Length: 199
Image (tube, rainbow, N blue to C red; front, top):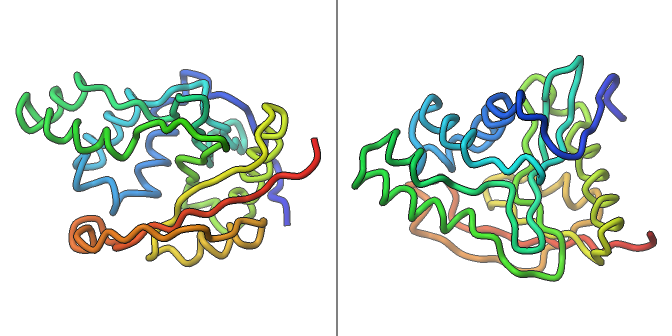
């Protein structure tokens, strides 16, 4: 069922940067907190890192309620800023966190459009916002000439995997990360691919 009163926008107006950062942090808090700290620190880091040209944002009553952050053509939705890490944590700890987080946010040269982040605010989850965002990503990818869309989902998020499978994603490869179980709460990441048809 399509959610009522939800509008999708390609790109993010600057005035919503902090709210979108908050949605991302809230959705991935367990995974992100070890690297980017408390909500106050993490949201500040994400706010500085967002490339406003690379999300599709869902709005309800004029406020952002969901975001699909994209990666393609060597550019990424999240571009961590070293200065913000050192401001939040000090020079040496900030540099270490920056280097580690940058590994998670690298933009890869790939043939498909990659969904780096799909996040929906708690109040709007289960109302079809995620599906709406995915359909918008598929349309954007077709318009830009991509033949497929890919993403990764962690092994501890079966609800997200079911959503992706429902809209046509197929698991392609599993990357084990057993050392991350106690740090980030997951031990594997599954790459999923959605072939696109038509234009």
